[in-house]
Image (cartoon, rainbow, N blue to C red; front, side, top):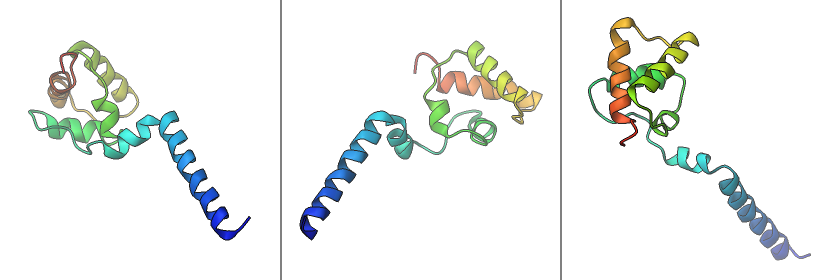
Length: 104
């Protein structure tokens, strides 16, 4: 093969590889475009500090839970070491349910 043919084969391989990766791992493409902060609202800063300390915002933003389920999720995260004070707990759960609830 000539140099041009080798380059074309490498380029075609790279395109195919990128296409396959995008098809197999679409979340990687979405996370690359995902926001890095939660939307504005009462409790945003507290939720950002508690949740984004360990998780990309896209993981939280992809959920649609009611307040009861968000409370259970926050409880699980606290059990795993998330730093959420008693004073901030209701603020964070309310923010998450309002921002990432079933109706959104």
